Length: 80
Image 1 (cartoon, rainbow, N blue to C red):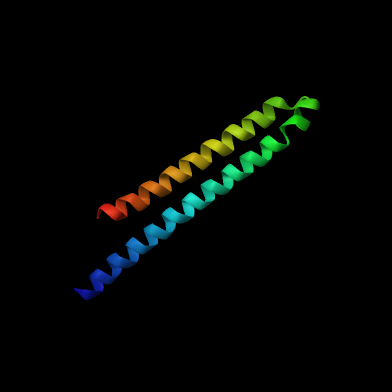
Image 2: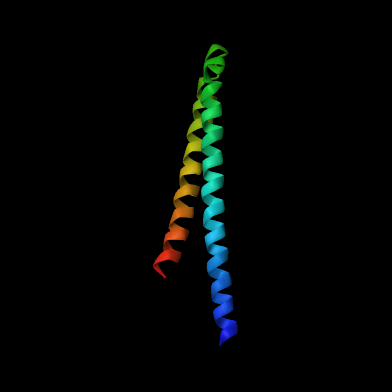
C-alpha cells in the first residue's frame, strides 16, 4: 500500500516538474519572439517582412500553447 502511495507522489512530482518546464520553455520562446521583433526593422529594409511576421507569430503561438499547457498541468495537481 505504501509503495502505491510513493508511486502516486512520484507521478505528481513529475507532472509538476513537467508543467514548470513547459511554462519555462514557453517563456523562452516569447523572449525569442521579442528578439525577432528587435531585428524586424532590418528585415523590412531587405524586403523580408513576411518571414519575420511568420516567425514572430509561430514563436508567440507555440510559446502560448506551452505556457497554457504547463499551467493546466500544475492546476490539475493542485485540485487533486
